[in-house]
Image (cartoon, protein in one colour):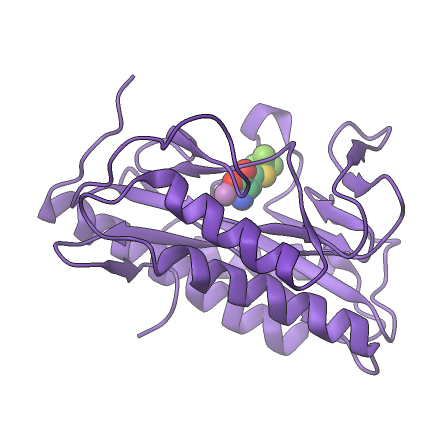
Length: 251
Ligand code: MF3
Ligand code: CO
């Protein structure tokens, strides 16, 4: 399967899916507090997504049992919301949300520090978000995909952190995961040329310590092997004639 180019009509549908994801993040941001369970965050997100005539992209995907992912501290991604997992002061909480409407998906992740977080945690969250912007600064038709990957890795490593190797970003459209894969680190070759109408979910996952990860016994939760903190930032990004448009940030 090749990288699918979206036309104006399809892009409009993706803007709508993206808007819902963006608004769900803004809603959850208000709810992430000490004592709230990740199950409750999941419930609020799912209710809002459905109120927008959309469905949560993640629910049932490869058997995933919830509507959002909530990954705390050394959890990198794919943390399963749970009634017994309460947010604590000082937690680093990554929330990943997908919404599907009118045949198209939107996908975005944010990481929030709760209460009195350490300076290290603050810097990790900030560098992760900044690395996303370093990456997308390379986006314009004619540039190569791996310029995004390299820019992310360089920025992260210059700040003393590491990028996860076992998970990558992805194209997105009628399927949550489409071609191309988008590594956040250097791989062989330059990757495909970017073209107007490509839609990419770019998602640096950054560890405070080493880049290695493993999967917990629940078969989903990805954690850092060295137990160091991890952060995640993602948006669904459209390649435009001279740059990009962020589909999962509220305009
Ligand atoms: N943003 C994640 C991704 O792009 C969300 C997938 S979680 C899953 O892969 F549960 F749906 F798998
Ligand atoms: Co994604």
